[in-house]
Image (cartoon, rainbow, N blue to C red; front, side, top):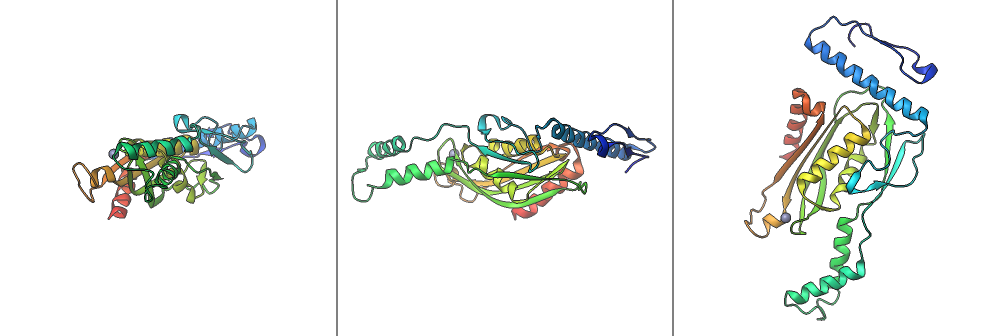
Length: 273
Ligand SMILES: [Zn+2]
């Protein structure tokens, strides 16, 4: 804490009225003071939303944008949000017919004994891989004011490349520096999976996870690194087996603060080996 910072009337009115800060420091202290102010603004926003009864504790409807929309109700005190997909429901029968046609086009006989059930299996596998699972996003108030990085490394991830409809798979490393709320830890993997189950490119997947956490959790910083092997590269074309594609997306102070950024990226690098 820098200077003589005090908060008044938080408990009585639910709003932060005043912040008294007397600044006597250098550049580092100025940044701390700046961060503290941002944090207070975050807390105030959260309190305001609670008072409004809208509880955007972890986000509001429509925040996901093109990748899907929130559905269902928002329960004010549990601070839970259920996500449902906003994309059209796949047509399973049509997909099966299309796979049978594809087999025919490839010179195979889909009515042969060995391939008879293949259209169903392929259609079901594809539908499963592009359909995100629903989950409850649980957050908790950051009562202790935890302000260090929360990192989860090595989250297994697999998705389907939209250019070849072949899998790419690897791991995601996700970090955030909490603001007013913290996330149930298993939820980082859930968020990653939510966007991985789609026709994707790795760059977009990485950015979507970072942006979603940034918008919905409103942390002070977010970092996402994904390293994945693309079957469309390993099995065909240039055939570089084992080559990894690494993408990263940094938001907030994980982008702007060199020390936080280096800390996260070096943790991610260590985890990669
Ligand atoms: Zn591809």
